[in-house]
Length: 168
Image 1 (spheres, rainbow, N blue to C red):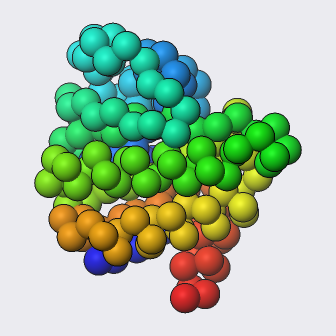
Image 2: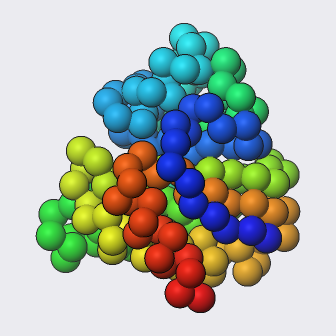
């Protein structure tokens, strides 16, 4: 199993699945969510309508349509409210549930964006710590997943992930 981080556009990555930092409607929005919906095309929103939304910390699977990735795993991260409103647990659940969905569908490679760190306001460094720790912990019990990539939009986020991945 390999963990890595890169800076780039998640919609261009040809892994088995990309994770969408979605809003609860799953019908598209801003940031990475909007970019994924635009790149995948209108069939993605049509399939998402059939899913009837998603709760914070949960994850749901769709096809990738016009994306290089075969699947999109949609997860809804928490809005940052200072950290004492269950945000760390909900963020960890996003990564755990996404990996569980991936394993259930025999997905071997998956890439995550920096969930909740955009408009949802989660501080990047604590979010990255939760992401890496949760992925490592969850993968210990999942054999199907061989590669996890953290796809960072900014140079700053990439530096955080690379530093944290190098610590262990």
